[in-house]
Amino acid sequence: MRNLKAVFTGLFLFFAFVSFAQQKGWVPLFNGENLDGWIKKNGQATYVVEDGMIIGTTAKDSPNSFLCTQQDYGNFELEFDVKLLDNELNSGVQIRSTTKDPEGDEKFGRVNGPQVEIEASGEKGGEAGYIYGEASGGWMTPEEKLIAHETFRDGAWNTYRIVANGARIQTWINGEQISDLVDEEKFESHPKGFIGLQVHGVGQRGPFQVAWKNIKIKALK
Image (cartoon, rainbow, N blue to C red):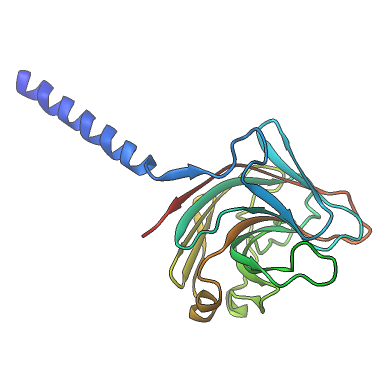
């Protein structure tokens, strides 16, 4: 019995260590209380913290807006929860992104780089989880793989997982893999950069909102 008890104790300690090791290395990007570590670039959309969420709200006639990390990231695993409070709003999360040179009285130039799409499924499915080159060439996901799907749950929280390792970018929504893309050219032009929460321009429509929470990142070697 003592030997059996020792075996069970050993197994418990082993699995507890594995669980701890899996959590090790994760760093929260959002503290749930304020926007420390973030800065807004482009557009007039607003970002506020409410009930542990970052809520982005559109502004009329505003171009795309981005709430960006002040730190840059290269190879990483990123996870977050997102909910579209209005299904008419298209959104996304920038990765490895940069800004172009400012023009005129701009404080920041145009945000550009890979973006993981956030879009409602609607009645016909959407393009959530595919990868777009924001102000940098358009869709990175090949046209033949831009297949509408209903993995994104409208009106509910959705868990995204993004792994960017070298030229390879993989995405999952609610545990289902959506994209596995290798783009050497984009990796050469955007090997690292900030993470950005997009509120898309909507012209005269709206106001529309999108919410994020539980944003965390783990650096990869």
